Image 1 (cartoon, rainbow, N blue to C red):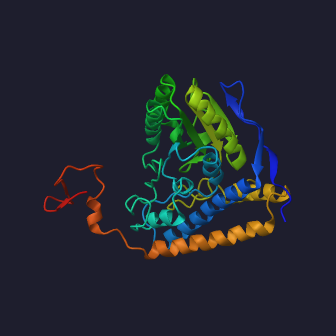
Image 2: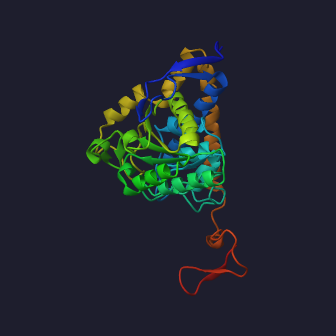
Image 3: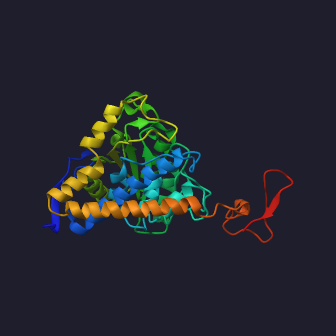
Length: 362
């Protein structure tokens, strides 16, 4: 049986840019929190493995970017914000879609193009949405200026909320990123810009793509923090600090040092620019789920039996969702003409593939 109700975890020291004081190095975690974080991370992992298998079976088609290995980032950040805060990210969005409140079925059904998907089967892998979750965006780096705009909206409405805008190390070299930094700092917007540094932009390592790989200091006049992105509690604490800072002072940058196990997308085996041994070593020594399970069991927060029970329940939940995602109704053709406008004028019609096809919208 578990013997502890709360523990104090010492995290890898944060690196700071333009900050005199940073997040706490001692992070508390309760038993209930440990169960929640483990279940969320494991659910994302099993969901992504299932998505990989569905793709290989040609049930999921098109683009598909998996989040395996990076679960601690989404789960840790979500633990420090609320659903009143906004999140916008790039195309590796399945994990964030889940933590924002969309069910496993909603994610998998979206991937299979079913009407029960979170975007009614219209968005697919790269365009998932939920409450205060603005996607899932397919253009590299384009979500960052949008994130600044969402943060502007929070400030304009005098809301006690922040916008978390995430991008990868590959997108960190985009010019629009620095334009967004400038505007956010100029207007002191409540924005947390997050570089999920998984080491590779497609097949190019960060070291080969960037003259400076200290992404947390790239904003120059915008403060930044480096955090171990494989430690869910470190990510949570860094985000707690960042949210408090952003609400009082304006934008801040987080760099989460993480790793992706799969290739860039399902069309990339991920072994031409790194070795299988490298991936295996990370899985064995730095895996965010394995590390957290070890911490929880060794400290007495959770037992191995409790973890196994959660694992079994998660497998059943995801398997059921996968079966439904294969058999739920597909998107009917007439749905192509719905939800184009928020409030369309009466009798609005939309053109189809050519001038001979017109349909009413709603």
